[in-house]
Figure 1 (cartoon, one colour):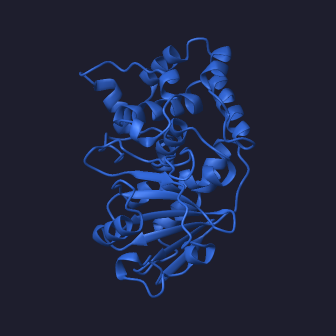
Figure 2 (cartoon, rainbow, N blue to C red):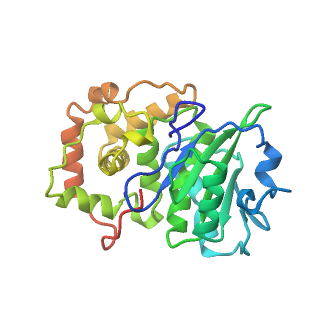
Length: 301
């Protein structure tokens, strides 16, 4: 994740994968004005452009959704998101966390953009953001900002995946953070298959897909990632979780290490001990993956 006050690993994230559409991005931003109280209550005595949504709220553990439009807890979106935490932690064999994640839902894109550009002018324009915001007294708040749009559920799954990882891990390399978010952002029935990414990789006539994990692991900020890097990050994640038991074991061990340190080192050197030619293994795996459904537009990063 691309952070401002600290190395960006956890969710920064998000998304530069589509030049014309915005994705999510995670940042670690320090502000004296933001405390835990500020994270859960509506801004008082501030200009409308600086007011966070907060008239309506719904709690779907561990998320607290706050909006200026009416929310219904029995909405299908909330029911689906309720299972995301268990899905992510079960898949990655990570301990469950109950740390609250505050999700601010703006009613429309215009109000969302006005708030983000005023409150966080240093951030690029994206459809959604995950922000790990340190508190002056210690600790940090996990915040997600987005708006009611056509891809709201997908954007929330992506951003909340970043938040869930950040809840239990001390740091995640940006390529893996984004790859995992891309894996979990689509409905559970997709089983991690991003049809748009898979279709692009298979049908690209500009240049053949040449995965290079060593190069990907050198990336440190979201600005270093192009749409191609997002596709490759997803591809590697799907290979780890669905293509090779040996590769999956290496990944899960790597994630466990991140519970204790924000600097886990590189994954590829240990991966080659179990999978001598991981890049070739990835290409063979992608050749066998079936589309989850009809090809849809790129996820938005």
